[in-house]
Image (tube, rainbow, N blue to C red):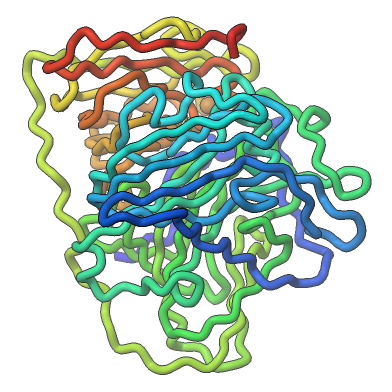
Length: 479
Ligand code: C2O
Ligand code: CU
Ligand code: CU
């Protein structure tokens, strides 16, 4: 059955917020959709791959008139796309050319924390660098790199510090799916901004403790983009890189499309949609079949009723491949009956946001868990339907399985591995959590202003073979 209604509780959509800023139809001329270049390694030595990643300032012609001052990774805005393969060992030389401290967080990679993971405890100071090494050991997925210095993650992401990372593996490559990057396999980083005088962004002026928004959709750093479709099927790797905005996606003609992956893996089976909502930090890969269109036709992708990308149909060869009915075997996580259910309570709004009744403290470990053991976590929100929000709950360093929403089956597109699951007001979402890597990791709401505002906590994952490892935890002052 095709899903024709957005999932999640309508009463809690961001459109009901007091501070909601609707997207506006773009008034500037259409621009070709920017496709971030794939980062080229400095050196490849078998399975060892070496990159330099520089966080830098830049200027981009986003609108007619003055250029906008931006930040990015190996690029003036957002970043290059990092393509890693399962089994590779990645060596990164991380360089900070920004005027302030930053960190390089790999959202969705199952790598040790807190240094490799790149959360708050791995600062790179201005003019300095840091080298990290980690091995990719996870299924094919769409992930991302973003800044994570607490508490200015939101402001740095707003400046542009967010890039896509793609993990490839043999299994995914054995399936008949589009994977020609930039041609039929397209990143779509969804963000929104407000342009002030001289086309500049002003985070402080737009500040809202429930999440900063702007009326202008920016897709891969392009305002009012179009994309020329030259193949019948196109795979879109959609990443919600917004600080706060939910995107409710649908195409003109209510064109049906198929979701094949979400967050950290392919879905077990493809799910057909006409209307699909994506909350902050989630990734959804969809395949759109333009077979019914002729050269010269245009197909529009909307969020709510605002056009965000125009697909201009060009000539293409017919494609008779079908998406396999079975895409992915979800690994069996056996829950240890000894481990209790771990409860997480998200509460408050605005400056009052908390997790388990506390604000984030960089020096406090909130929970400890053994590596390699599966445990049930129960995530709930005390928000109510009236004036409540949908909080996108995220965990570093792990890919979890969503088991239930208020005792019912999870949504059909959250049956693969995930690292971000959105919690409706008053809902209990149960997930199966298993860490394959040790370290200190954050878990938090991914409305980034909530995260910076303290709706965040930390877990220490202990490798039973090395139970005494000590981690150096930064605090706000040393940072
Ligand atoms: Cu997307 Cu704590 O991260
Ligand atoms: Cu993360
Ligand atoms: Cu939140």
